[in-house]
Length: 155
Image (cartoon, rainbow, N blue to C red; front, side, top):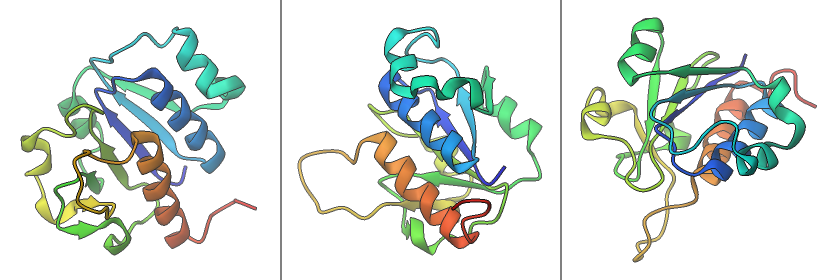
């Protein structure tokens, strides 16, 4: 496993399906925090992930606290439009966790404030829109982490 991708209460099945596919093809583990805004059996979720679901390393948690308790000695980064640091400033190492928030409202303040120095963002122009699509953001940040790791076991 290269990196851990965490989706906090994801709402859109197509995004989660696309992210699952990215995780399979980059050897990243996907962690989902409930409640989910969809069923994992939904047709759209499966279609977005195509036939990759059987290869996905997936864990599901009832709460964010459950995930943190299980991996209490691990480093966590928080992707947010309100971070002071660019994602490319992070110094990722194998096994790090990158936490992404809900499509509609991002990460809760209590999660982000747990370590403000680990809040990272993808730079964007100021506009009336909120942010990049979640699956695009995951891909951008994950590939930067993988670049820093030397694209392990990737062609």
